[in-house]
Amino acid sequence: MKTPAIRRLKNVSNEERSALIQMAWEDRTAFETIYERTGWSEAEVVWLMRQALKPSSFQMWRKRMKGRVTKHRALRSPGMKYADRTVADHRRANC
Image (cartoon, rainbow, N blue to C red):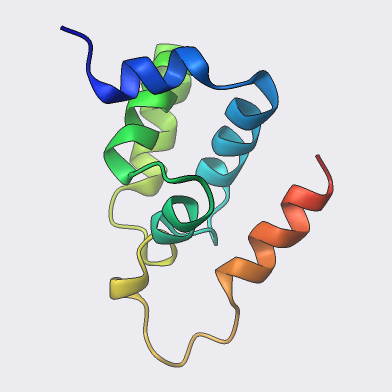
């Protein structure tokens, strides 16, 4: 039986796939923002990255994302001045 992420990946356009990967690589775009914009959960994004990247690139990405404060809103201090939604809007406009 195929998981929902596998079914979703087969139906995603190249542009959407590229945008998801770009947002996942960005340090300041939280997984919560990715979910709000695309409906893809953190687990699904990780699965997509595992499928789309070379193994060494995926390992490098996971190492960078693990515990990164900026990728999880709940870990951020209230004093952080930037909004990840603004960063995501700017990046999406360049696609």
